[in-house]
Length: 112
Length: 110
Image 1 (cartoon, chains in turn red, green):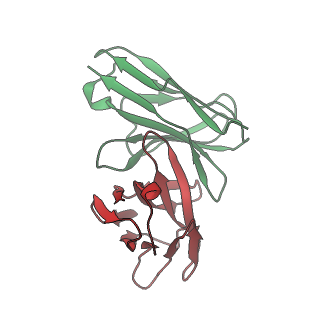
Image 2: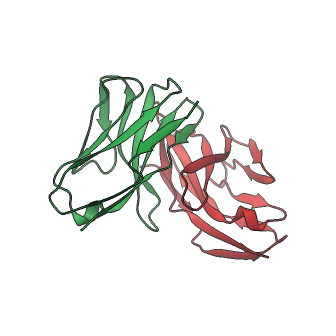
């Protein structure tokens, strides 16, 4: 079945460092891909998405490119801030009912 | 526009008790979902609904029941609570492009 694998955390970075969180997927067909962010004590919020191969999703300085050839959707940000500290989830949607399949999440801690 | 609301925020149950987690959305979305989030395990789909009167099982439905009598409401029922149901529960509703999540219910079964 469909699945998402993302890098284990926690990831600890200093402010202004470059961020990469790896995400790969297995799916039949051509799913849409998502990154969700969860701040402490809150629900998940959509960060960015891409719906077809070579699409780049971007938001708040974060970017991810849908790479069909490597089945990847890695999240990047050029300069992280303390306020980016959160758990990041990679996900794909599966089928006509828009069900999401999530990775296990990656905790990012940014230190001043 | 409140989005997706969930009640209660926290709850402690004893083994064998039952309860209903409430979920309401005001965005007129047909699709709604219940997930549970266990530490280090991501989110797992419990049940989902594609419209009023239509529900279906997700990945981990055992021990839970749902109903969808209106577009707005999608309650999750736990019968005979067990320690394995200790988790954070999230309700979501969606368009075809994006899922919107509630703030979650933290449930502990002792």
